[in-house]
Image (cartoon, rainbow, N blue to C red; front, side):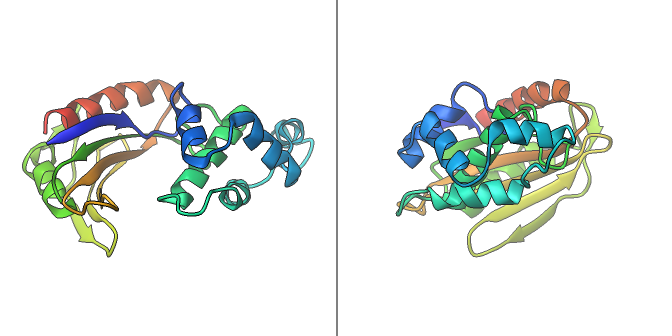
Length: 205
């Protein structure tokens, strides 16, 4: 039913940079050179974050990253966001797990041998039926579907918002990636605990 269980959080952990390098065909030094060539300088960015200059907005860094993504890459906007986040961490604008708005988030995903709707149904019948997660009461879920993804969203009392999304595999629609995205965490200490929690639930499907 599965091939793997992987993290997709915003933290630039050991596997994040190699994954970006493989997907983009650029080494991390080449990415740094690309950003600098387009006017994003790590030293100036750090100064800007301290008030001594003007730090570029996340959206602008992501736009610059998108320019360098190769033709034919699946989900290039997603990879551009990842490259921007990695650069912001490199420049000291955020710590691993911190979003561009200052709060913290974590994500985990699992590849499943189910189409996107069936993957979300598997979640709904299992973890999605729980009244609480790690001691935090879950709100009534909100379900939706777009042309590209199927969603299962809920809030956690005192612990942010959770979005479970299933995206079909581009080459085989009978397979999909089920991702848990948890926003609104209070601090970096909460990130790894929730990462372990969501990975365990995904692994148990």
